[in-house]
Amino acid sequence: MPSVCARTLLLVTLIVVSACASAEDRLNEGLALQSQGRYVEAVYRYAEAIEKDSEIVGARENMMAAGDSAVMIAMDEADALERRGDPVAAAGRYRTIDQMLARIRQVGERLPLPSDYSEIRRAIFNTAIDWQMFEGDRAAQEGRWEEAVAMYRGARGDLLPSRSQVEASYDAETRLLLDWAGVELEDQRPRAAYDLAQRSLEVRNSPARETVLAVRDVQEAALDAGTIIVAVVPVTADPGVRDWLGGEFEVALDSDLNLDHWTRPPLFVEMADPVILRTELRGLLRGQATQSPLLVGRALELVGADLGVMIRLSGIDVVEEDVDRGEYQAVVQRNVRQGARRTTVMDTVPYATLEGTLTYHVESDIILVDTSGREVNRFSASSTRSGPFMRGEFEGDPAQLDLPADRQAFFDPTVIADQMHIIEGEVLEELAVAIAIGTFDQILAGIR
Image 1 (cartoon, rainbow, N blue to C red):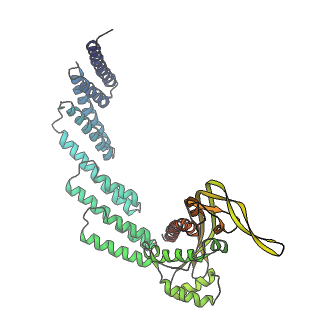
Image 2 (cartoon, rainbow, N blue to C red):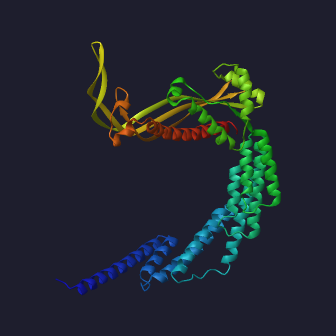
């Protein structure tokens, strides 16, 4: 059996042989690519061979020869592309060579370049930058906005622009976005105008003062033109929902929405004063219990709102899941009549304990109404929340049962009510968020 030292020596030998073989493979691949005229690819293969074996014969010489051929061909191709009117593609040839030269430097070599290489390369880059700026201007004049933005950004991309060229592209993009915002405002698309003005503010890390002022003017005009005043009427509930949750749930949901979510509307949404709205609505209802879109529309006119929001709790499902049931017996006293007398007897009765997961699913319908009482949109929002529960079952008064200490909580009304209130509280919070987000999304969807 070979010793440990012998096995180690064998392993090292195999690794060295493997590395040499891999370097030879890369060298042979480079030779094949070079023979096919694929000089840039050949350079990368030779560089890999050198990294694997810095002393490999022929790799450095062939890499330099392939690199020299790649440079000559790329310069000729770039010249032809520029003469055909495609300076960006011409610049791309030089960027390919830049990357190849960097790869050669990584393995300790420097490729000699034509004396005028840097001057020609810079001139090609400048031509490509100028062309992109020109095409950006033309696209802007024709209303091809995003194409113009792409051109201006390309001008300050990877073609090593000067500081003045970068500043010129920043100025052009900023001006374009503000012009575009003005067009959107004229076409009654205030949200689009607002967003474009914001984009113009973010072109530079530190925008100029005149840009900030121009953006402020556009955004103020957009908000003036597009803001919707929204009035939200009190939450109502279908009888089945109210029977289960109680009337205090809809009151609490209404309060949560008014104290939190309706106080933080997004841009282009303004909330009408809920107190004034409810006063006007009570006068219109005149004691009626039902809110109708027509009555809400009339209330909107009285408070100067554009849209009304009607929220109705429309459904509830309460399900007990994963229930662990325990069956027990207890001895209770019963009063029974025996002839003309009543007497007390002892009786054995069954009862049960249940533990598991209690799940609430509450649905709500939200209707958006305009000042004419017309329904302009409708959507639903829901909440599903679960929590642990425990309760007991007994056909009679649980107070009669002589329960052990560990089962008394199953029949304690306070414990049962608390576990339901915890779940209902979570349902209320989640439902309020869903209603508010859904409402604002629907309103904003109608503002272009």
